[in-house]
Amino acid sequence: MGVFGTDRRVLVLAFARMADALGNSFLIVVLPLYIASGQISIDAIVGTRLPILGVPVTESLLIGLALSLFGFLNSFSQPLTGRLSDRLAKRKAFILVGLVLLGLASGAFIFVSSYWAVVVLRALQGIGAALTIPSTVALVNELATSASERGGNFGVFNTFRLIGFGFGPIIAGVVIEWWGYHAAFAVAVAGAFLSFLLVAALVSDTEETKADAGEDLSIAIRGAGDRLLDPVFALGLGTIVMGIAIAMFATLEAQINTRLSQPTYMFGLQFGAVTIANVVAQIPVGRASDVYGRRPFILLGFFLLIPSTAIQGYVFTTAGMVVVRFIQGVAVALVFAPSLALAGDLAKRGASGATLSVLTMSFGLGTAIGPLTSGFLVAYGFAVPFVVGGALSVAAFGIVYSQVEETLSDSRGIPFVSTAD
Image (cartoon, rainbow, N blue to C red; front, side, top):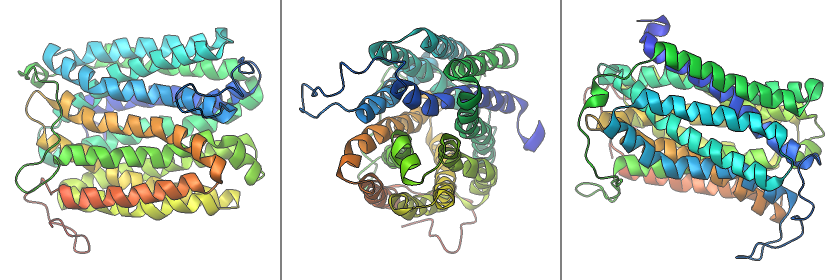
């Protein structure tokens, strides 16, 4: 065992994901500013209309598209790459190839000036992430020797991953201010390179990876017995909403900075506040879910997501936005590790990649839909995207409450949250 009472291989995967996530999260802050800076040619596109819906093309919509494309390709590819990593027993190889694609695409941003070139590079990054993420979480799941370790493993893994993801936007604001866009893209490349070295040197596939998995690439939707939905699929729907709720903030950087009269680095802090809360809470929540059960924490998280999302549309101070985003991050922390652990509890031997990809896909899909949603809805009022996000969170809570049961039969339970219907 390593520090935090966690398998050293899980820690290596966590550190690798932290370095990679720090580099990639730079782009959430850097790309909107880079596209709007005049260094990317968009004048010929702005003012035209989408050929299908006839919606006017605005700068915000183009930014939302660039941010979201990564998530869409990443998400829709994950069930396939997760199952392929099950069948080929090559988790490590998938991770390494994905990191190479992420790093090369990040570095290439320095050399492009066309908006459509940006779109192509984001697509390559999405494919790279789809190769990396399901294989990584499958390895973390397989390295748990029992269900009583699974929540803790995911708590530690998510903590380090989110340290990178949360502090990346904060550091990005400083890097842009002092050294410019090229330096920011260089940091993203360095993150992918460091991750590659760590995984190549210190991580290997487990024996469980080589267990047989079926040829069927489908995802279970219908539940057993009187359940309408499969529990992992129901959690996937809720996770999409969670991703939307936290990611719609990204597209509105210019509007938020103007509304709150704040500099760019404060937006980075507000964006990162969600992740900072996760860094604080992931390990204790993950470990607690091994003792008290998965379901109580998941329900509490979705319940807290409702007000913490909706109220962002009505905050008028910089400090207030930091606090609300932090509370939203606590909600995400209550859901994330217990959900992955619950899915891991239900995963059949040798099928961790396919099962857990439902949740990783869903989160990526949510973070892809979020920027597009806010980029479109903000035209009807600043608060509208956040109110819609709050309403979706109500629906997510209802789905999870009614369709997801506890998986740990010997859990102690939490008195104020029922673990059964």
